[in-house]
Length: 296
Image 1 (cartoon, rainbow, N blue to C red):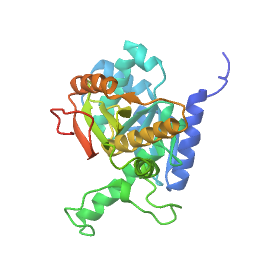
Image 2 (spheres, one colour):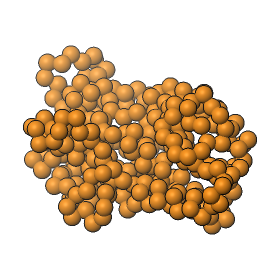
Image 3 (cartoon, helix red, strand yellow):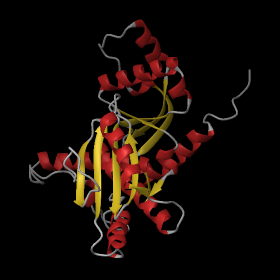
């Protein structure tokens, strides 16, 4: 027998480093490799033999807690094995179900949740901070401090000491770049910014957005898996998709990528709408062809 080389693999180290920064900025705490039975209590809940064995033997990758060490959410890093192994997927589903019964949110992440930076913020930070802000917003609304019909919109939250306007509006710079680009074009050229939204068979949300100008189109798709955590996932999808379209426009203007023709885009658009049962998400200006979705 010997001591293990490290309690965390390299990817988990990256996640933990980001979590340490997030909790430090938000008066929270993070714990690693806690047993599931130390995080949620069985009480009088009936468990099958398989569930009970898993409950007593499994651990959580990361547990985000408040300053009093009360669990707020579980964060699981899913490597390639989670997609390839049926046995691992079965274990994942048991953990998901046990956390659901306990009312504890569980977030499953991959590398891009901590390696992709949008407007200076990781996706993991956006999710954790916005989730906690929404809880505070809902509590304020229940206590009468916020009008009951006021919706929670993370893009228009401006926090004291945030260092910038509307920090959770990740797509702000990209949106501005679209308008600036349209301003460089001939006024007679048809142009527009449009998006459609749908879901796959597993409940993952998917969005297709496009910039249309003349006979050219720049388009991108983004998907977010269904999570066992309540947070504004469609708002996040909107922000990431907008950012990715902004990155594509920047590369196009530098001559690094070419735009698609209307015919090329039409084929993909129709496949996307059929595969994801898509409906209009937003529409500004012209659309390149008539559809039954109401975005033209």
